[in-house]
Length: 239
Image 1 (cartoon, helix red, strand yellow):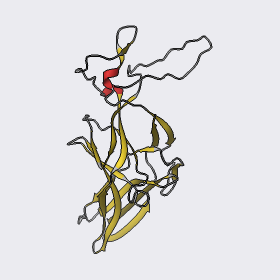
Image 2 (cartoon, rainbow, N blue to C red; image 1 turned 60 degrees about the horizontal axis):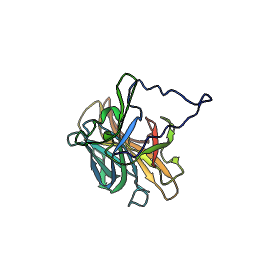
Image 3 (tube, rainbow, N blue to C red; image 1 turned 90 degrees about the vertical axis):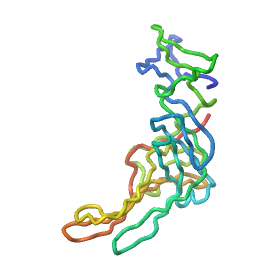
Image 4 (tube, rainbow, N blue to C red; image 1 turned 120 degrees about the vertical axis):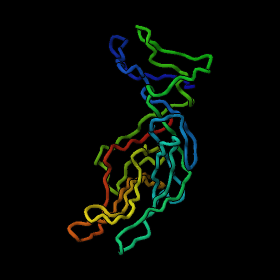
């Protein structure tokens, strides 16, 4: 279970009120932490996944991308490489190599059920008796904090998102898609896209890339271009 609760703030009168209408108080709890090329979590809803891959093979060049498999509640970690370019038809594929990384997984407190097999713990209740915090809802003895946020659209391919190489990057939007070739006469006929985090020795970079085979009015084009971050990028650290 978690080892404590921290409230930071001050008030000239010596006290202050914490307003928490969702009644989860702490926001997010760490539900898993460790190292490996995948992690299965005790949750049917996709949680946030923070990773650091400094020193991992290819993590500084190809970077790391992730896949969430909802059928077994598992995150998988890979290095992506675009290969197998063809011109007849226009297409390319993504080669994925599993990589073992350091990770921690966090879940919204209102989605974490208390471990009722525990016979002891601590609860914080509101004045009406509602339970706002139950220490049995913390399966991992630890806590984390968000160290930096890069706004949506604020990171371009190759840009630095943090100068602290020990930060963990939240990766739930750093995903990929290998689009199967089709003979669709109008629209997308194949290609790929992915977003990755590159863990350099002194900093961490964002990278995104897309390649598409487009068929319009009988003509065919192959186009590749960089992708910005469409969602905020969160950096976190364990306490």
